[in-house]
Amino acid sequence: MPSVSAASGQAWGRRYGMGVVPHREADDVTLGLLAHKSVRAFLEDPLPHGVIENAIAAAQSASSSSNLQAWSVIAVEDSERKARLSRLAGEQAHIRQAPVLLVWLVDLARIRRIGESEGVPTEGLDYFDTFLVGAIDAALAAQNAVVSLEAQGLGVVYIGALRNQPEAVAEELALPPLTTVAFGLSVGVPDRSVPAHVKPRLPQSVMFHRERYDASAERTDLTHYDRQFALFQRDQGLPGRTWSVTALSRVRHADSLHGRDRLRQALSRAGFALK
Image (cartoon, rainbow, N blue to C red; front, top):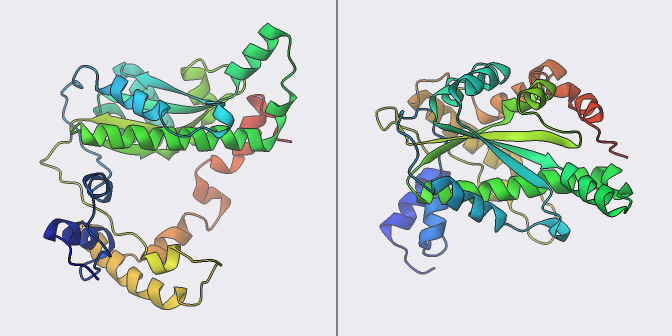
């Protein structure tokens, strides 16, 4: 195995745990990706001019299934609107604190409007796969935007809790039928006095398969990861719960989804047939 730089070794160590050695030298883009962390404390500083537009250009450069580009994004900067959205997302303070909240949408309304304008049927929008295309497109686009924003020195954190009350979010943002919130993204200048840390991920042996799915070593490797994750939690001043316990607590009951158990009904009311 070829030798790698200290920077690559440290990046892998932070992501997977010390002692995990990369197979080859990481390029600058990969090093940036390995350094990703969720930032939940922001300065009041406004964003530098043009950074959001750069990020949206990066987002629009992501792959799009059949080039449908079935997503949209809303930049929310108004403090009162951010406060209302924060309440809908469980009072997450960083939504109010960050200067910009990007709300990423599954947007099939645009194609429906084009079809109506051109007198062309759009029955394909009524099927679940087309909704899934919009959700995947939105996720790919947002992650491109995250890479751009972090490269410009900004911090971000995803806000899945905007799906807790999708109808109320839709009303707040004047969403038309056939659009719905996928997730939010708080963006701002990180407050370095409240450090964010790279969270260890599952080992590749658990996530990465070759040729066929193979979970034969999963239990042993998960046990090691659970110990590492619990130590990380304690280092952050949090209860030293394992990853397995934490993950299971998020899916134990319908109530664990914090309102998202009724998402299918909300989508139906928003006009998604999901056949």
